[in-house]
Image (cartoon, rainbow over all chains, first blue to last red):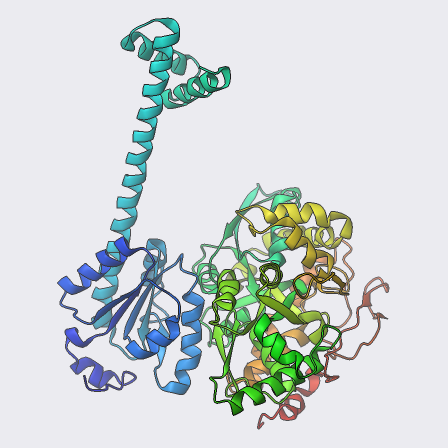
Length: 210
Length: 411
């Protein structure tokens, strides 16, 4: 690959999409691969995912990316900040985001939990679709994770309710439906959630030694 | 106060010097001023800065050079910020690997040696290492616009070590410092507490210099907020400063250190053992594994000696280091911008009415005091602590260019 002076917008414009080097720094492999897939579908070939952040700076200097994505929980953002300082001496100017005045875009990214760094001089029209895609995939991933968390919680609650039912059936000699009705009534009269009532039954049974 | 209770979102980084912000929220000082503080623990200084700029945070604990860099247009977004309150003085240390300390010991380093002798020992060890053809040593610090970066460079340069050629400086997030030292990815670092003490406790590091010995009573963290917020909501800013002022007085009192250490030890605050945190709070630092603690005066100052006052000479000194190390080229306009980032006028407006002792001046010659010294103030009882640099250098804010020339900058 020919060396491209990335500070100059003219050669950057001539570069085909496949030559745009994009790095995704994310310790979460599932999320990183969702972004990576999206970028590849959009025709970007030079996508590198970095999960291991040791020696991050050296790897970035080797890869010379035009666009870097990093999730906001990643403390290595401060390592990137140093790169902007270092880069001045090694001729790899990397600027914060597309356009410092584009706060709406920055806001959308931060809300989604991702930050992007783009080589200075790269045209906004070229970067915006990449950014939009990353932001929407980040948001989709968060939604997916929330749903997964909810599903997991629901499953945990189901297990507790089943255990509480079992305890009641055994200690009071009632059937499953009666045990369930008993718990639901208790929940309603105490304005608590069914799972909470079930949890206190399980806890009480443990303490009593059931 | 006529206004309803307000909620302010404040960002902080898990370090011992988040204490004043945390105490303001968790010990009821903000509550007493009609404020509810929503304290948000952050993972990077870049996040702190961006979230303040975007208005997610109303204010945050910031590295003192950070708002200055933002105003100079060299650190992230162009978004004007102000620093009206200092969250404490000192608190950092320089730690080297036990292996490097052994090499330094061969060249005269011992725990009784001051920073100058320690730096000379390091210079000798570096020279010896260079003869073997080994790669340069690597030192970690936390951010390009941090006091850590500047004090590490200042200390290295004092012994003729060029921080940009004779060693490598690299940013490592504080919670990863100890691991980086253990794995040999860095040979030393400059970081705030509790990370130096943790390196000592894990027997991988040896503390060779503390910030208070490099420059006593020196600036470290500030409260940073957007200029537009400060301009539009002066009453809120004043209430926040009053809460921080009282929190700082509480946090600085030795009688409260045990309670404060417990408060900071919580996993959603600093998340380190209370005993380790207590060392920094009480200034009883352990330099190396198995050694008895050394009593260090002014290791970390939260309130006394006008520690919370935003001295504009501090802002200018930080600017001088940005210039010295090539982060920005000096112009009188930039110097004025840096100076004006610190806002003693807001400090005075907020805290004069509650009886805080206000110095008459907004800047001072740094490094001139060798003993506690009374200075002109509102009450006439203000005593500043000794503030010397270890190399005896002075910083006169009225002769910035003379200072820059003295450190080799062509002005």
